[in-house]
Length: 394
Image 1 (cartoon, helix red, strand yellow):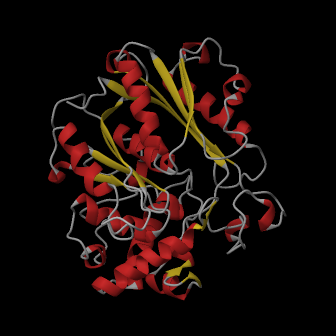
Image 2 (cartoon, one colour):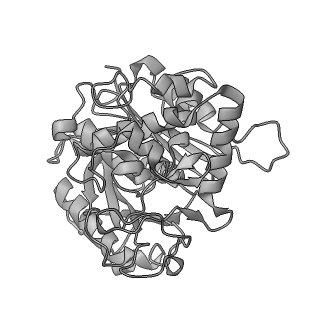
């Protein structure tokens, strides 16, 4: 049993990420929530629960509920577990709905780090600007507690290379595959074709990671609306059911026996999430994997069991993650090429694919979708299984 009850995503709201720089995180949150409610055929008075992703910004605060005009909520919290926080939000919402404490819960993530003509140091992320594609400043994500996150992921990628012979070209295959998906996604920020040569010729940010190994930075918001499976049947959109959510936060203080650069929480959470959903790894038809950096995708594939430890480079090199491949992954372009809304990037694409509404990029088999959430430089993780099918194995 998944422990979550019979719960489905019935509303999705995604603001434009391609051209908008102006606006606050609060503005974007309000827009995404309005879009999600309209998508679900509901009014804000139908909401009795709100969970806000607390991404360390002033706009993601308890005051947001009041600013959104929500009253008489029976469930409300600002939640944060780095990039893996969406897992806890989904668990909390689903268990509350399953227990009958609330009927309908919205989950909201918003962010607005980019400012027009602002110096990079004046944004919440800091750091030196890397590029300005299509009018956007690109900034390597900076983690407030640990310094520039790219350095931590670069060390992890280099260790994997040193131990297993993984190459930069193999990491590049991930970026190229996701850019190919982004070309099919009208909502993606980066739709310009990219070859492996383009990846290799992009400048090094922190060796061995090139510019195109690093995620985007985006202004915008994503909101999800969840309710019971029974109620979902009467709403306008095809429900996408939450089959399981399992968290694993192994931490890494450098003194234990876990090699935090090579083994993530996906190694525990992934198999447990599959068991909770009564599925095998072979049942998974679609992956939406957290991709703050290309290395994150590679090490997550290994830890989920799609290939052995150290085999990720060879596994991805043949293009199987891209359009037409045997293991479609990050089909909207992911955080590398579509937009960066932490795990809500992956969740939004899982919902779109689960509904069968992805248009040109829609995969043929969307039965069981595995979503991964990662944060804290591989210290936090959640694995999430979603499906258009209600409960039974298909």
